[in-house]
Image 1 (tube, one colour):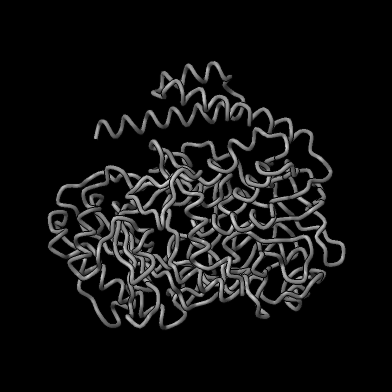
Image 2 (cartoon, rainbow, N blue to C red):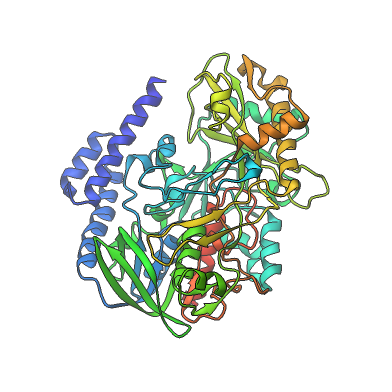
Length: 575
């Protein structure tokens, strides 16, 4: 425990030094000396000084010399936007402007894996919530989304979950574009990954830009959880993103984006080094008001920074990567969306596109099934180290359940006050990753400051509630199995419940995985917003590259599949 604490303290000092270098508070020479004193190798300290120092100087200059036009404007620096912007700038001479409403990612809360929870409902979160719903007993579920460089990849858990084979084959069928099928997406993953786990030449890549590894030195409860899953018929695998996600599912330790004890958000591998180039400008604190348009062609963006409104032209294209809530909001407030709804809120209709804001999806994560430790153990990595994918109904073609074993107590606001939950507890959080329910994002006004109304539709469809009930029962069976008995003093909640009591527990436990998606889906039907090449239907000069374009949410944590969307966008533009 002392060694673990010491490592965290060392990591915190290095994070603070890096932030100081980026913001110009520490010079390069002083940074190298202090970083080595804090435990970094001389080589690492020199590399950080070069990369972050050059980037800081270039970006300060570019921000002060804002141009009137750029070749590309990328709205958002999250898991899609960072990929697109970084590759455009690094692989071409195109002038790229990246507009990020939030601030820097060089913060302990972002870089320290165990501090990820402090980002939720902070200034690094847009602080969205769904409207109260009878399906979750009148509760308003929170919908965190990153308002910081890196977006969700900076504030959420660092799980790298590719998605199931059938997800991508479905996307290909919806769009009529075989570039989205599993075989082709697999080649993207192999190209970009630097996988540190068991070799699998057919499925995993090495030497790519994205460092991915299994959780290191896990809490002993994590491998025991895999044994418990096997005891109820769920096979354990060495890799959660290999063969396991081509078939019926299974259990595995998590793949994570953690290196040397620090979070690797997506900008760390696509933007940080690129920001030293003169052809990219990253503006933080830049709130987009709307797209500027000439007829049905997008010509640029109007945004606000430091109280001043700017209008900048895009000579080639605007790429909207603001996420599944803000992307449809920006579209609708720019006049692109369901015509009747826009007129209702005084927005001039530029193009009637009825699917904008529709088809909202998110994974359900229930809080949770909780046990008291015999002897409390400290959480490791991101405190969520083991998971499984399984089917609530054998007739399904793809696993629809994804619980996570969480090494701390996890209860909803209802159950937290209902049950006596001591500090030394751990959780299995039931999860649904193939929801049937569909919600929507709507405007409440035409101004950038007007809120959006989010109907999450959580558990509205009976099939989702039945699946969650099934998952709770399965999680209880696993948690009470012999394989986990050495970690169990007692079951804290929910206990042996069934019928109406189980249903009530499920409604009060339901939360989300923070995987908002699908509100600008790609496809060919009348409710589609973009085509297979991610261009907005009926609009010139505009593409979308974020989780909103998924026609159906990917099976598992959505960061990795959103990176693939960014990669496809970059491939299309660079071609």
